[in-house]
Image 1 (tube, helix red, strand yellow):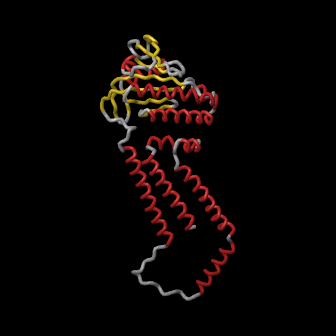
Image 2 (cartoon, one colour):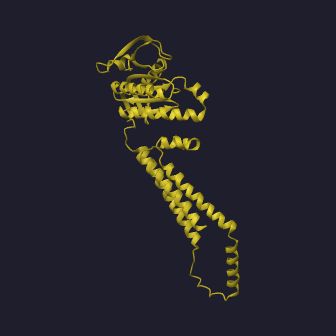
Image 3 (cartoon, one colour):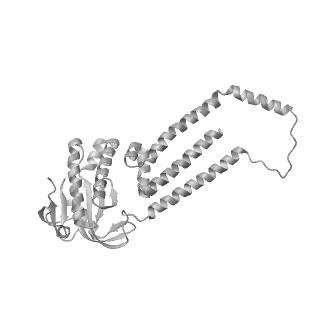
Length: 314
């Protein structure tokens, strides 16, 4: 029993430390929340999204189950051992009692010592993980937006008709498609030095320091998405909206009219289209091919806006 108890404690402490290492190196508290949902629904998806401590926990968990099975077998079928223990107990009762120890002498049962050590180890592991999570949340990183007003290029993306597709495919199949799409978008965002501000469902809000970077990222996403549809015809087409202007950054979030306008431009885009506003187009380097879409009314925006489409197809 003592060996199994120690095994369980060590298993919990080591896995807590591994999660802490993941938080500091590649994860974040927000990612941990998303991954915890994925672990309960599709563990394979969590592994594909980079949550490597799950592999250690799963493999070691199998060994722990085997240990538990061995202990249960000993408890259920170890009758001979129990009879031997009872005989020894009867002999001990008939033998002379050892002299009593002085009152000042104290004994601590081994199991009690083990429990105390386990409690201290568990508390230390929890404290370490909380400390690492706090450092991961507060460490300076490219993904965090400094507070204040900033001139930024903002990109919204979403998959066209994804709600109906998710209903027809079912959760398991749709989650695999969605995971592949998210990986593709995040790889393109990272390659173009963008910062993921938020995601909801299959949509992304990303900020860039320049419209050139935003358009380059959008073109890369569209081209890679088109290539992936040759192998996965069910993947929906993507639409992208880009606007540039001043936004207010607070608590790693962006707010302001520039965000609202970029979202409306994204809604106005056709499937497979990249739409940019005139302010964003004015700051693009020469040579970016643009197609004039004219003045377009946008939902919730008082005046029509001049929009242009990026000719991204090779």
